[in-house]
Length: 110
Length: 114
Image (cartoon, rainbow over all chains, first blue to last red; front, side, top):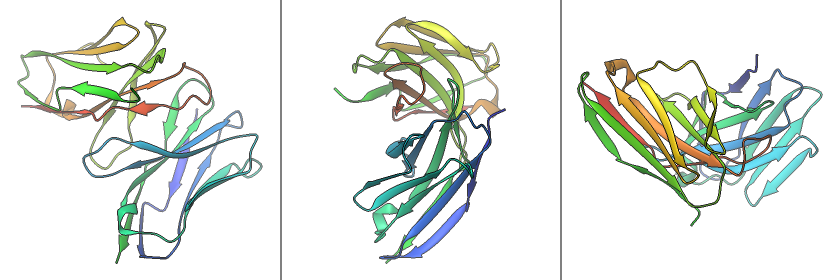
């Protein structure tokens, strides 16, 4: 069945540093890979997504890269700020259901 | 309107109570979802409605009963719940139930079962 592994489970960085979160998936039919940010007590919010016909996508300080051969995709956050502190979930969709990774708790200290 | 709304925000119920969670969206989306999220865990899919018809039921116990009265509304009827059902219940919607359609989440209902 579909499976997505997410690493690391926790990540602590200093303000201004970069943060990278990686997910690997198993279903080669996967073609949609969203990233959600969930602040404490709030809803998951889409921050960026990528489809399988694209290798990289960037939106200001956030970028996502996809390696379909290796079946992994990564979230890159540059110049981190304290407000980036949250839980980040990667997603993977091959059929009709969106499967989430287990989440990464990012802490940015000032 | 680009939001998914949910009521109530919080709900406390006993194991013999019957209650309902409500979800609404006015984005013209034709797919709507119920997820259950436990603390420090990812959302787990429960049900998917596509064009007001139940398309996916992820083997959810019958004490959870979904309903889609129209294309904008989604309900989750609760009856005889167990304490382990306490969680954040999230509703989401997307343009359609297809590959690559972004899902937008509501703020959730935090449910406590005593």
